[in-house]
Every structure is written in structure tokens, then in C-alpha cells.
Amino acid sequence: MLIKKADGIASSEITPKETYLNRRKFLASAALTGAAAATGVAFRELVHPSTIAQANATAPANAKIEGLKKSPFSTTEKETPYKDVTTYNNFYEFSTDKDGPAELAKNFKTRPWTVTIDGLVKKKQELDIDAIMKMAAQEERIYRHRCVEGWSIVVPWAGFSLSELVKRAESLGKAKFVEFTTLYDPKQMPGQRVNVLKWPYVEGLRMDEAMHPLALLCFGLYGEALPNQDGAPIRIVIPWKYGFKSAKSIVRIRFTEEQPVNTWQASAPSEYGFYSNVNPNVDHPRWSQAKERRLGEFFKRATLMFNGYDQVASLYSGMDLKKNF
Ligand code: MTE
Image 1 (cartoon, helix red, strand yellow):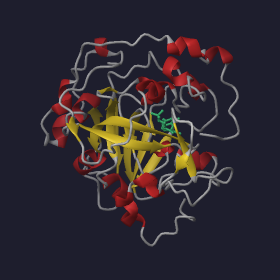
Image 2: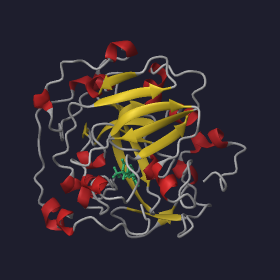
Image 3: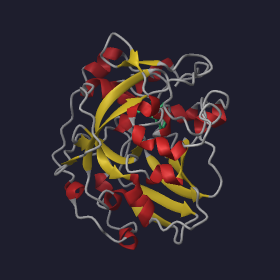
Image 4: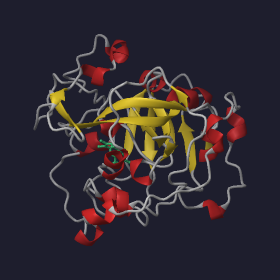
């Protein structure tokens, strides 16, 4: 994301390129056995189990996800190399530099991890990450992912439709929006010691957007658990919206009547809106959105309306997308 360039991140916290390039690929033997688990687990049964082993506190980085199904929503476009997807990141909680999160997030603890479900729901509760991952069978979804800055990637994500969780949350009729909040932990997240954004990072979706089958609750990429820098252990991926809508390392999902104020909108309301649908016809006030550069490619390509995901167009029929940017 581009705002007036953040200062205040100590240069000692910025990783030299050689360091991450030489980073040894860490292989964990534990497979994520829950990934292909049966669907239909009752939501109430998933309340935070007291059995989470503290010993399991380090991230299961590179743990393979077994039994991933292919998704009809996948693009057949060429996937962006794993190295680019995992070393060119926006994750301001760790660094405002693209190559910073890969190094600075490597010891980030993703177990135990719970997600609070609250707001306009019948029953507020805390769910354990491993239970959430078993709510439905995970799929591999190869999505285009377009950052508002003008770069894009094609990633084989792993997860299931966000609607699977939303429908089990038993939200009340009044709930019109879903808000997602990232972990706030400045001890682990050095970027949060700097006021570059208002922490914690918050994002939101209208309920019908959250229920759209393309909206993905994501736990992995390239058949493995999410690397920390890509939002472990749980993030959303909303492929028809600019990348900043896809909040990482989520700890809270809140159902609301009021439209949430997302972090980037709060930071620069004239530049970043609530909807943030990919739209080549609506420029960012400081640059055009008509084209994008796929990481690893030289020539730019045309950006497509809704990032090419035309099946969401009906969600916005009758809306002025210049006003609701
Ligand atoms: N989520 C949090 N919590 N913090 C962030 O800084 N950056 C967003 C989004 N989610 C961000 C975030 C932006 S601007 C983009 S483009 C995508 O994450 C990048 O995801 P990736 O690094 O996996 O490609």
C-alpha cells in the first residue's frame, strides 16, 4: 500500500535481500490432517478446546495440507512463483518493506490461536483455529490477487468459502456487515510499534459479499500451511477486491449493523474506500488503475473489472461504483 511513506521502522529491522534469499526452506513433518476432514461439524462443538498443547506454539510452516480438492473457481493462468508470493508481501504489522515480513515474521506464534466470534450473533464464542479448519473440506483455489499499488499475483490458496463459517455463526437478522480484526501484539509485530496505521488492522465486508462463494477463508498456499508473512494461521482472500481487503492473521470476526470503518479507509478516506472492488475505470487519486504488472513479468497487462470475477457484478447492480469506490 502506498501512503506517504512510513518512517520510523528502524533500519536494523529491515532484512537485507541476501538474508531472505538464503533462508532455508523449513520442512515440518506434521501434516494438517484436519484439512480434508468431514464437513458438517456443529458450530457449538467447536468451542475452544482446553487441550491445545503449548508446545505447539511455533508455526507449522510448510506443513502439507492433505486431500485438497480442486476448485471450479480456479483460474488456469500461470501461477506466480512461490518465492515471489512469499518474499514480496504487504504486512505492515511486520514491516512496510515488501521483503521485510518474510524475515520479521519467521518466529511469529500461530498456535495456540483462537478467533472470537461476536457482535450480532446468538452466542458469542471463541473458536480454536484447528477446529475452524475442520468446519469444511479445504479446496485449492487458484485466484488472481490484485494489489491497489498496481502489482498482481496468481496464487493457489487453500481454504473453503467464508460462508461456511458465517452460516455457522448464527448471526442475528440485524447483522448487515462482517468485520475482521488482525492480531494486535506489538511484542511480536514490530510494525505495530510504529503509528503508520491505526492498529489493529480492521477490514469489513457486506454480508452478501461475505456469503459469496468466491470469498475464501484461507489457511494455506501452494498446498502448505500459510507462511507467516502471508497471514498465518487464518486470513481471508477476496479476489475481486484490492488486496488490502484480504485481512491477515485474523483473531476476531464481528457481525454488525453499521458498516465497519476499515483501516485503510480510516487512514486515507479519499484514497481507500469500503468497497475497494478492482475497477480499471476508477483511478486512485494518485495513479491509474487501468493496468497492472504481474510479479515476474515485464510488460503490464490490462486490469479487468472485478479482477475478472464477473460473477460478483450482481452484488453491486444499481450502485455508483465511482462513489462507492
Ligand atoms: N492484512 C494485515 N493485517 N496487514 C496488512 O498490512 N496488507 C494487505 C492485505 N492484508 C495487510 C493485510 C495488502 S495491502 C495486500 S496487497 C495483501 O494483504 C497482500 O497479501 P500477500 O502478502 O499474501 O500477497
